[in-house]
Structures are given as structure tokens and as C-alpha cells.
Length: 396
Image (cartoon, rainbow, N blue to C red; front, side, top):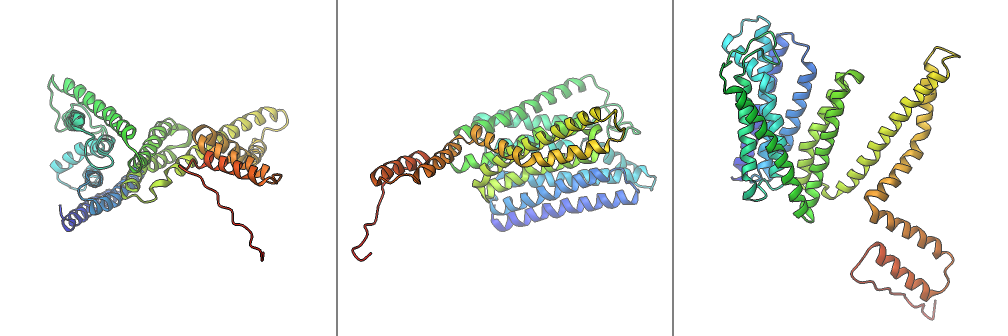
């Protein structure tokens, strides 16, 4: 595909996605539907991020399928917003078409399948060059495609109430004994597609070297964050509220296209080790401080229960304790992470510190030269080490 054609197609898909989003938002406002504001923000963010990153990749690397996958996600997210907005507009009694309203409600209940399951399978399966690892992985791609299509169709024709609109019976329901087996088969194929796609990325990483290895690290980090954040967010719905959970899920999900874009466009590609290091350190630090805060609040409340019933003293004392704990905890966790996951860097730093301490007391030039060669060889590990010392001139 020519660069000009790919650019026009990419921009056209972005315009289509944004037009659908805007139309869906307009229908929602006309229906005075405020209950879905949080979901609308989520969809808007997903659509915009996927659209921007997809456009950058598709215009610069039109032969790479990853860019077009991201753009298709943006389009399906826009269609989801349009369907939801029109369904609410129809349900509000504004006089919209019944046929279109039922179709919008039915699609809206299943609209998460394309823009969630397609990235969860094909983004992993084709990353980073847009092609399969080998022809042996083609059955995994077929399982994912057939499973996603089958899951969408069986959900569309399932009898009963619509999941997102329980006041409506499914207008396209089909009472057939084969529907349940097909649903189960679709779920199995989707599972094979997801697991197989993840396995493909792992195999690709083990075979990769250099630049491609760094690319896969970016996507692996984003995927690991999604795998951790989403279950915790669902568990915490009743603890810290839906708003915080939705924000956490949204930020983790948009990390996938951002990581893919950084990797494919090779923008600061080799900063991934620093990002992983900081993620490990601050993730562990956050968990430690939260646990320390909650534990100290509980202990202080029990200790002060006989003195005062006001819990503000315990909260204030716990806050001060956690603030004082921040710097030493961060330094300790950083040392643990470096020692456990970045052993070569850790050993090199320790070697340099030891050499610097001995350097102050060393007066024998030959011993210093020998030790310096050993330190350079141990820390930098070059193929060859040579030391040049300039002789002092007679006039110096």
C-alpha cells in the first residue's frame, strides 16, 4: 500500500471513529442520560489513544498490521458509543426508530467483544512486525477469529434479557438447542486464541535478540500491568468506589497501544529497562506504604480507644509515620530490586564503590594499573582492555 493511500485511509478511519463518538454523545445528551458518563469517558479515551497510535503506525509502517488493528479498535469503540447513545435515546421515548433502537441495544450489549478481544489476541499474535511467528501459528489465529465471531453472534442471538438493557428482551433471540453448544465452543476457541497468542509472544521473545527483544519487553510490561490492575480494580469496586476502579482500568488498558507505539516506532526504545525498574520499585513501594498505613491506623485506633473515640489522631499519626517511611523504604526496595533483577548492574556498582575506596590509599602505580584493568573487565566486560599513561615532559 502506498504511503499516501495508507495515510488517507488511516485519517478516514479516525474521522469515522470520532464521528461515531460524537453522534453517540449527542444522542446520549438528547436522552439526558447521565448514568453512563463514566463509561463514555472510558470509551472516548480508548478510542482516542488507539486512533492516535494506530494512525502513527499505519502512516509510517503501512505494511504492519498492528497499526490497522489499533485503528479498527478505535472504530469499533466509536460504534459502541454510537449504539449505546442511540439505544438510550430510543428508550427515553424521543420517537426514534424502533428497529434501529432494538439493533443498537442488541449491538451495544455485545460491543465490548471486538475492541477488547481483538487486541487481547491479534495484537499479541502479530506483534511487533505484523506477521505470524511462522505458519504453525496460523491455527491459533483461526481459533481467535472464529471464536470472537462466534462469541459475538451467539451473544447476539441468545434468548432472554439484554445484558446492558435488562428492561428489554432480546429482539433477535433464537430458541435453538445448538446455541448453547456453539456458545461453549466459541468460548473455548477464544480461550485457545488468548493463551496461544500469549504463548506466541513468549516464544518470539525467547528467539529474539537486540531490538526486537526490547520491543517485546514494552508490550509485555503493559500486558502485565493490565493483568494485575484489572482483577484488583474489580475486587476494589466496593472498597474505593467505581470511579477509581474505572480510572485504573482505563489507564492500564491504554498502556497497551502506547507501549506498542513506542516499540514499533522505536521511540526511546531502550529506556524499557529503566521503566521496568521504576515500575517494580514504585509498585512495591506503594503496596508497602498502603499496608503500613492501614496497619498503623488499625493499631493506633485500638491503642487509643480507651483515651479518645476520635479516629483523626490515629489517621494523622499514621500519615506522618508513612511520610517518614517513604525515603528509607524507597532506598531499601530499590536495593532489593537491583540485587534481584539487575544483578550485573548491582555488582558493577558495588565493585566501583570498593575500587574507589581502595584508590585513595593506593600508591603503587603497577598495582593500581592491574587493579584498574580488573575493575574495567569485571564491570564493563569489554573484549580488550588497554591503559595508556602519558609521561610527564621534562618541562612539566
